[in-house]
Image (cartoon, rainbow, N blue to C red; front, side, top):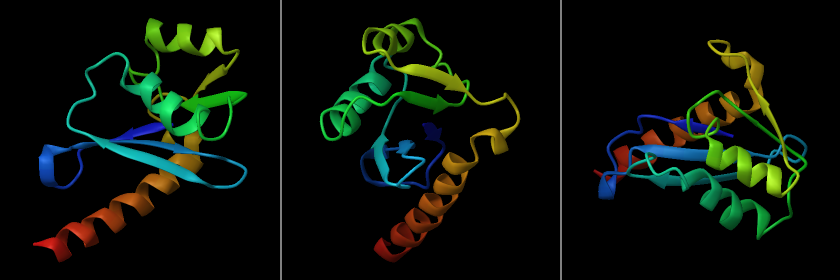
Length: 117
């Protein structure tokens, strides 16, 4: 999982994109947010877009962002027996699948927003 920021200017001032990529199937779930300061934004995203639609994942690999390293997120994962794994700080290649997905999403979003102007 990763948070892409900042996004190109979009309607409703949504500047952040929360992205989850399944490493096996390469399936991507993403949702745009105006703010990611809410401590529950990641857990709500996981519940709605991953757990309720697919199943409880065994492992979540994320960067060391405060949203993924919070007590609320750790407790949520612990209650559901989800193992947390964190990529190495300042080494985005450690979460290469997420970074590759982010690059593709940003390129597509920029094109779409340019066409909408």
